[in-house]
Amino acid sequence: MKYQLETKTLTLAHRFTIARSSSDEKHNVFVKLEKDGITGWGEAAPNTRYQETPASSTRAIEGICQSLPENLLTYTPVLNRIKDAVSGEYAAKAAVDMAVMDWVGKSLGLPLYKLWGLDPADIPATSMTIAIASPEEMKKRALEASEYHILKVKLGSGHDRELIDAIRSVSSQTIRIDANEGWRDREMAIREIEWLAARNVELIEQPMPASQEADMQWLKQRSPLPLIADEAFTTVNSIYNISECYHGINIKLMKCGGTLPARESICLARSLGLSIMLGCMIESSVAIAAAAHMAPLVDFADLDGNLLIDNDPFQGHKVENGAVLLAREPGLGVQL
Image (tube, rainbow, N blue to C red; front, top):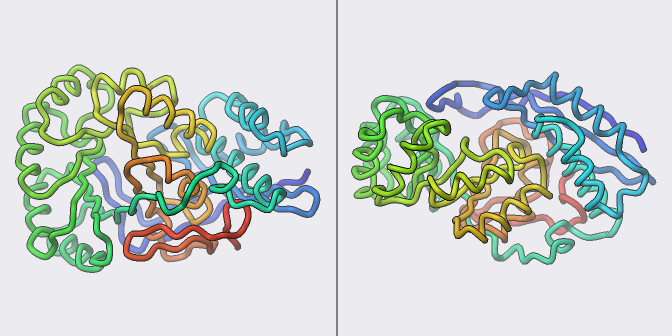
């Protein structure tokens, strides 16, 4: 088996500002597995929030690839080996996991949704993200996203109501809020949530820092809107605490380590009565496709990472009016 790694710079169409950071580009690591004339693609989107960098992802991917067995078709043991290969470095694990699954799907002549017995017609409509900017700029971006039925609006700026009022002046679309841990005081958080509840807001992602579990329990008891864990969720084991503080969970391949732990997380979250969102980082069509193939299993989709960049190196599935249309080609269904 051969493998190749390359770090690519993904350029954002707009500056991407959230409560804790701002960026114009992302550096993602791509892996290509080759065996028996078949290629499998994977992607890591390292996140400094979880102590990851392109360099650390590259080192981890190399180590994982060197430990892969020759037989990839019995893929569950292979994915379990990837899951346990290194400590942390979940984006790197996700990259190799999806590359293996791309290879397996191509080897069997099946797109991943068919391999998993899923119906792509059950994929929820994806939201389109509007990052923090000036009121006028956010109004402009809302108009640009008019074909989407759902907007995901980043808050935690200190002037959140002004931003929502600006968007609401031009849009009646359903809004989902992501505060990215930006509200530090629970009394302020409940005031903001109650204000937002009157403005066609569907849910709130990560209103307060993940570490403030007692405050989140207090907030859950009082919130008129569902609260979704984002930064608070990392691995399957964290879901038990999440069920006490949130109504739902945002599962991202880059946070949990790939398709296998994501599907395990979905099963556990369902058993605990949590609603489930499938989300993403800033990613190309490779990683977005890997998530989209399992999206029929969830309640909410936020799979717009490739739509936020100007230079997606890959082609694959399409999004029309918020509907995710998977490619029918085997594996992930993406081409360079």
